[in-house]
Image (tube, rainbow, N blue to C red; front, top):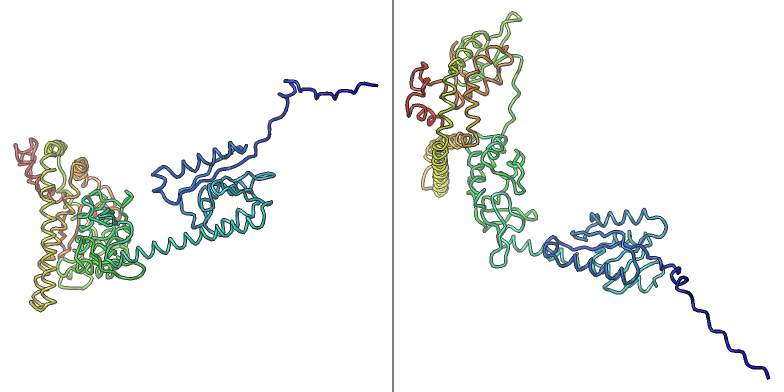
Length: 525
């Protein structure tokens, strides 16, 4: 009887053969993580937690992460920065696009457009925390449930937006500004509630913009330069240009009222100015006129006014070559003055600024030596000028209220107001002058001395048609009375022009003794 044959045992694969077995191919993937606010990013737990979870999932499921995309934005609207970059990469992928790894539905999208965009690419989406993989092969019931989650996420955002708007409107009804603080205020938390408070560094400077504009002597461009000189900048540190100054002057929040959702509310936040001052500024802004461009056919057109009646001086050409200047209103000043005569008088006036090299050096040296004294004096005078401006503003407001209540007549109010307004303009001019003199402008002051010394030579070499810019720099006003020209200097040129004559006088070669130049410099302030 034949012996039964034993079944053959399968031959073990050799170690060399086992080593040749190819490792499974890792499927490419991208990671997307998102938080809905920058506060969550600063807290530092949400994004790192999402990334750790998704990286561990990729290792466990043999996925090769090509890139990670992180957004710290709301998903209510389309166009998130890194989401858009991820979508662009998925569209450009050759063959099968990478798998998208995301924590859960509302991290990827909370609006229908993004959902449709992702679905159109036919990419596999792994919702790791939900334990769901969505792809072309997913069952219709899974896609249906996922669609419901997207709609729920969108409803959550819409409801949250409604609640936020409702809360902001209620805050406005309570009399508190519900948004970011404008320049001059800062956002604070009081008893768990957001409020705005006066900015200790900027509040008084913002008030100065209103007060200076109220004097009628300041334009928006001039206020912009003033803001730059005193270090007043916008909320993000940018320069306050004329358009920014206009926005500030038009904002009623500084006067205790504000607009929210097209409704005007009475504010309970701290006020910077009175409502009366705000309305005067609005009236002045609404009444601004555009200055006519100066005629450049004549050398001094637009620079001179009539010394008798204050009207503008007009120009006429006679015999096709002679230029005459006369009062445009034909007042009692009937004189016709040749342009050459005015030219000679301007040179004579500017000639008063001439000084020797030695005197210019002496003045420059003494200005630098007195720098500390000047700075202390500037601060004291600036404080006094602001107090004077503030006191006069309160007087005008109190008198205005007395007029409304019938305690004083309109004629009496107008008479007193004119006097106070004149004093306010003087205080405003003091503030303007003082802001230009500081430790930072000491070098400019020395440069002004040098400019004064050279002004006559520069002006005498220029033809009349090119002299206007230099004259505007040196002079604030020019008056023609009969055939005689008089001027008002811009400071400190007026002080330089009226200094004592003679190089050996009070401010001569040796500085005029111990206190001479100091006294002269004090006059500049």
